[in-house]
Length: 209
Ligand SMILES: C[S@@+](CC[C@H](N)C(=O)[O-])C[C@H]1O[C@@H](n2cnc3c(N)ncnc32)[C@H](O)[C@@H]1O
Image (cartoon, rainbow, N blue to C red; front, side, top):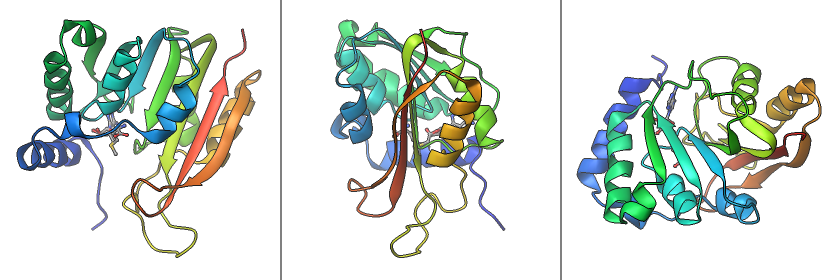
């Protein structure tokens, strides 16, 4: 039977991670695509959609961003919240941990200077998902989407994202082009060095003023 990547799946996954590898949030470096693509941006208000245990939300808050970190796994959110509290109120006070299902959760229009979505499995159509997240970006703000490709193009082998639908370069840029006015700054597939296998689709775009 095909694997489903629903809330129960992720709750079980995060529960196992937190039990078997306590302290994993503090130990894990933030995602390299995020640190590379967001390093030059002036801190403002950010959304991390599908934040997991919060490594990127912590990095953004430490860099001065105010962050809404959304996930549908309460266990992942609690791990992130605890890690933030350990870093002190200067960091924890900058992050709102929000339980929400990205299948339907919709950001407030034009609220965020940066919307980040890394490695989230998309249950519905990709263009609808990209359009919904793009709606939350403020004029002049940035949208950063990263998807793990399900098959390694070099070897043809399944990656850990096999069976999932994640953002692809083609679908994301098509959706943004259809919205009109977006400046596509980065749209490329990059070898996934951190995990040693596979390829990531990376799309960074700026909303028109
Ligand atoms: C592969 S993890 C990536 C976590 C984090 N973005 C990172 O790069 O480490 C995918 C995350 O998306 C969350 N997720 C998947 N589908 C979701 C949905 N429909 N609504 C909210 N969160 C979802 C999962 O709970 C999980 O934390």
